[in-house]
Length: 212
Image (cartoon, rainbow, N blue to C red):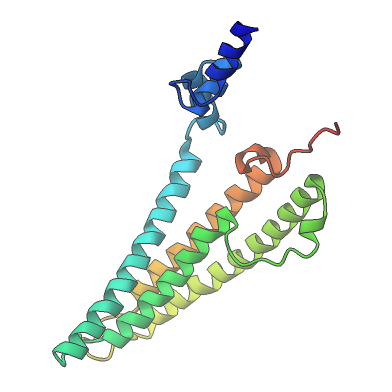
């Protein structure tokens, strides 16, 4: 009886190890080994994951550029009555770039605004089917959009469209935006492939739980 009391005390708050490691030790596992196994549940980082991270990093960089442009323009205008040349043109062109790279950043993660009235009330199997169908539709729409934007890049270059103050060509901004659209197509294609062949990459949302 006394030894059982000591074991209970060691399993409670008197144990020197944190609760996370207590659970691992009591179950007979190695906490360090099991933690590293959980971290690598999705397998080694391959070229696809590096591509995804790079595109998302570029998109985040454009968010910072647009924010800095707005902040600097407002501060100069408010405190020094100075306006950056072509501030309006740069602002709208950078915002367009941000929108298309934002599509790329949100397409793979599925973090864009969605309506899940039906999705929330079906099982994992139908959720995966809905996600595959929706991603294929998104892939088609963004692919068509990428084609039309590609045409817009070269028509803008052919028409010699310039900014108002500095007379700079605007087609390079359209080209950068088009590259964001191309990145979106690549990420949506990767998402479609993984939804069909590697659903484990998206966690446990498609796993059918056994009936207990």
